[in-house]
Image (cartoon, rainbow, N blue to C red; front, side):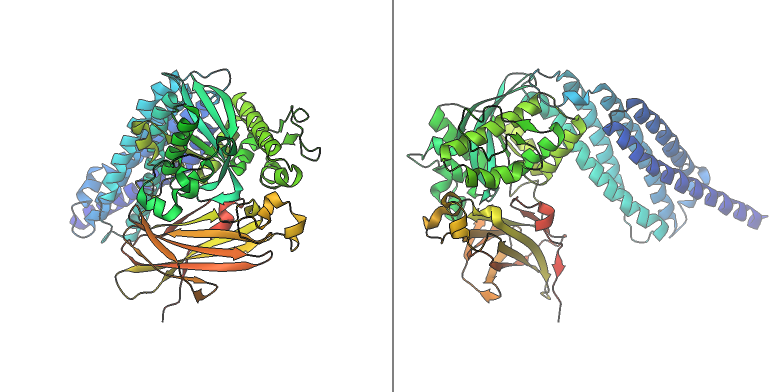
Length: 583
């Protein structure tokens, strides 16, 4: 009789396991549908998806709460696997009940078209009201993630441990996304002028003359936001601001790496890859030159403008004739031609620098006017802005410390230290040394190479390969404004670049080589991170590989890499991490 009871009990437990597995897997299949419905603003479909999902997770949770399952959890050795499965089922149901469900309700009440500023203004009330629920959902998902993180996977059967590891990863990602959404929901209304008007300095970084955070800030403007209404005014250029009579103070570590030029010229504020430093310095220069105190800095580059134009559609420069532009320049700018136009053609076809500046100003005015008019499809615009943020082509800094503390947690803040920086993060950054616009012709790849040490410390090589693709006759076929004509000691047609590599905190920069031969390099520290710099000069058609080796690395996580956004897509620049062969 006892044996029959045991067989029945095992059969019942097995049936409960099948229910848990089937219900959770069915629930996972529903998540993409819910996400798609939310992104397409299909509130009814999203709500129906959540109802189905809740049915699935409740069934899994009830199966895991069955007395027989609870009894099995007490069995030595194997009981921990039953307990872990119960925790996964409970956490899944909590995430749906406290996280996904409330979020879908929030998104039902939001008008996605109203989450971006326009020239007519935006009702920011719904977003402010949604913020507490988004933050609450983030807390709920974080709590579930923490519970699962506390489960020791060693000793669990593979059927339990493998899904547990996957669920942990998914919850970590979901938690990070929700916290970002919650922070955005709290900050965005205020930063868009819900309480009082906000004014930001717009820097358009031109990657044709590379700087560590992107490119030389050429066109400047002030963006005013009030109750979600956006206006672009006070357009000027870095050249027009001129040189500071006294350099704006910059911390000594960065000054030793990048010189006092950072605080003397608006064109050089971003010689440092640390955007908070660059932005803060830019506002100080702006205040000294104009007497105007602003609330923050927004930076974009021509590639990011292209992403915006992909969604808003082409813009037309109506005042081309008035400003005396070259007839060869396009009057219609789109995502297809804006990069070549702003990084190359404007210098090749408009010889007068004041007309170049006017063309840049006209493009910026029309792009932001199109953005403010609400042109294009909102989801596509969000996606385009997201691409710009992911590639560090759109950066943000607030002069208000509480807001900046939040922004600094994310990549959009462009910091080289702090919460947004992974423990094993490396950086490869570039500063032009030609004094011209030749970086449009440079193609680069950057790769991390993990090397063997036989010790507890890691060692990683940052390998940067650069090629000057300018025509062989660049010295004569390209305008002197593009090549600099040798004015700064670099032969016309050649490109000189300061290659700067950052390692993780507490590591050392140990050696440098150019094309396999050891070379001298400058070693520094910035925010407890080691920094090595090497200068290379490339004639047309020439390639070169710089390698900087970092040792005594104490971080054992997967190394990751951040690079200066250039004319190339970042995905073409960053190569997969390689492992050196061990003897």
